[in-house]
Amino acid sequence: MRPKNLAKEEAIRSIALQIISEEGLENLSMQKLAKAANISPRTIYIKYENKEDLLIKLFIEEVLGNYEKAILENFDPKMAFADGMKRLWLNTFHYLKNNKPAFSLIRYGKSSPLLNKAFQEKNIQQGAFFAPIHTFLKTNVRAGLIADLPHDVLRALIFSPIQDLVAEYFDHLDRPLQIITEEVILTSCEIVIKGILK
Amino acid sequence: MRPKNLAKEEAIRSIALQIISEEGLENLSMQKLAKAANISPRTIYIKYENKEDLLIKLFIEEVLGNYEKAILENFDPKMAFADGMKRLWLNTFHYLKNNKPAFSLIRYGKSSPLLNKAFQEKNIQQGAFFAPIHTFLKTNVRAGLIADLPHDVLRALIFSPIQDLVAEYFDHLDRPLQIITEEVILTSCEIVIKGILK
DNA sequence: TTTAAAAGTAAACAAACGTTTACTTATTTT
DNA sequence: AAAATAAGTAAACGTTTGTTTACTTTTAAA
Image 1 (tube, protein in one colour):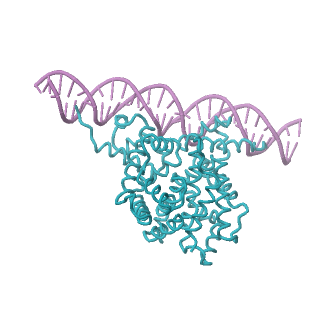
Image 2 (cartoon, chains in turn cyan, orange, brown, purple):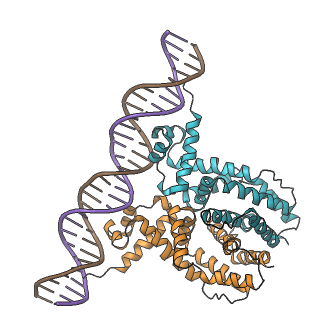
Image 3 (cartoon, protein in one colour):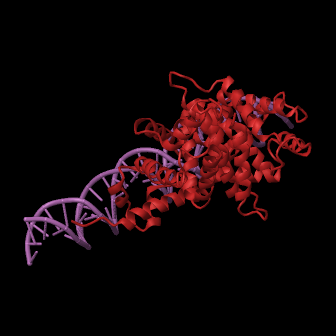
């Protein structure tokens, strides 16, 4: 039998992300994607059941999977709190800043009911994404080092600013004065650490 | 001449938001909207040039306009820093929690290139949204009370957590234990204040 | 009371949509 | 070398898309 062309699978994913990033999820169509990837629409349906299946797999497996791997690089839940935080923030900053298409779909993951629902289900059924971060926060709460708040609340306090800072990095990209630098990220991280430490 | 039916205009806006919130921006169509609002598609085009115009006006004028008004209620840039922060956080929490359709479109404003671009342009050309907050932060930076960082960075540090907490409020709505309460919001606000104060 | 004109409707337009049908190509196994 | 079969294509399916055309209704002003 004929073996599948992995380059075409990769093209489907990367070009879908590119369209979403440049034109928006609401302007992604199967036919546009096929044309841009230089394949027949039918080829997409070999790998994916339908458009929703494509979007969900792209989001959960491709984007969130890679994002998780990148964020957790050189991170260990047993690190000292401030060190762990800085590692996570810098990993997030560098990965997202160099992967705008992935970042775009991640943002849609919080807007689109389809993607948000898929994320919740995955998070409940198959063990949470970013489990080491869960451990990290729990450990530091138990050690009495940081505020004793539910995990989801801590996550919002600690990681939403860095995601918004990356968004600002992209928004300011074409302006003369680039304000979101690694130095600003580290300063911001220290501010967040200061707030959360008891 | 026949006067325009304001109830129909209002229906267009509120039902559009409802569809976006329940089915996603990517599933809003002019025909679906017309049918749900019990009007002819043509009627939408009396008030709006086209679909993009509708979305932009809905986002900028309707949603962000009301959001701004609600957030700034009983707020004064001259308030003490902690008081101002708590006022802004509580206003945000109460308004968004009671206006899920508006919150949905606000989230799309950070995902969708169309809406994000419209926001940037409006923010630059016609004076910034949330100008009193700008003043508030600037004043407190100048007074040496809070970290001296660019306004956009301060905004990310201070307001992205509350928006994410509201998202979690909605995500947890149907679960037995509601964790995002006003008490949690105030505790979180104090943590953010502690971090940002010099 | 007629008239001007915007508001509004029902139905239709071409184009694009998600998806499938009918078929060809390429490769492994026999 | 033949048979089996998944990968892949080109073209089309019926539906829905955003938008418009042709027309009717409703009101304020003349």
